[in-house]
Length: 265
Figure 1 (tube, helix red, strand yellow):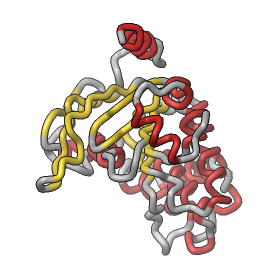
Figure 2: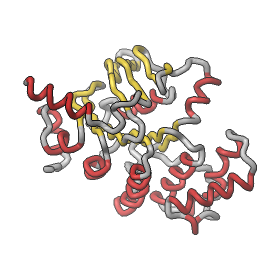
Figure 3: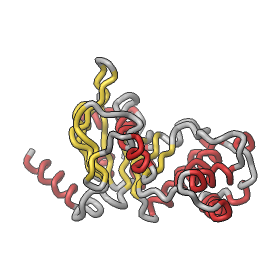
């Protein structure tokens, strides 16, 4: 057991930018829905440039924690700190924090009556006060970044699910976030379009974007994550580098979960 503890400590010390203050800290975060405990004292750190994947059964608290990160859900105990500062309570101050975090949901939530370009340009114009020509230029560049430069004039109804999700990623990037939050971004996609979205996410990771990803795509987590966190019943049961979680998990429940998904290393 002492060796396991020592190995865990060594892995934590080796994390990307572990020698610098973390970008995000979850300190004993609790979330209740009536009598149901969605998060029971979750503590976690996210470092700059790190890709953290949250995995575990549906309903285990992963998406809830993600939504607590930018105050889409209020917490009932503990605190979330962004660059060492607790999340504010006032809505005007919360909006300032949200501007620093891009979020991509399961559903694409694009405006159906606006083109891909206009969906991406809208945030910088309305929130950042950017000139329209500058915002549209940035939007075009971001659409090209996600492989959709030729689809700028298309409306969402004329795009595949994977293309719509890539527009949603470009829209989030248009706000120049410091952190990107992904809530099961491929779960609503046809299997043939999953890869194109994961490819864009992998490119962002390689460019050094700080990312927290709730996902059931174990291959992506194993290949791209710097740190993997396993949830069960609103609590963290194991965390570590992907080599540990996928190849040598220390908790029986982690082995069971991965086994049910057909993961064999």
